[in-house]
Length: 152
Image (cartoon, rainbow, N blue to C red):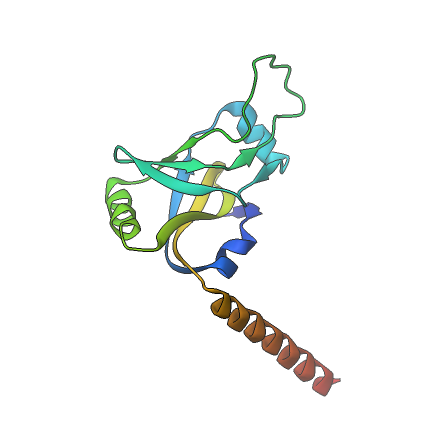
């Protein structure tokens, strides 16, 4: 099973404690899929909203396909439906109801020719948590460099 990652939300793991993840399909048109294959997509500003027992991704930007001759106006940030199994949907909706939890897209990728979106349940980090994350990242980088220099 080959998975080709198209876009990742790098700020998601920095700004949120991710407690749970799920994989969802995305309802797209043909031109949107072609545009995604070109890499003309951003999930940085996206979030997942649950309405009437369905999940929708809001704020995901898919630019227009470059070779399209479509004259119909196209909204790149339109709301797109997510395809989830009912038990996954109920599990995510139950966790969203907790105080301070939100559902955010983590990465967009192709899996066996289909576009999949990895979504996560996150709880926002405070400023001191973000500082700890940065300190840990710097410390790990210094350790790797010192080990690398020691072996030379």
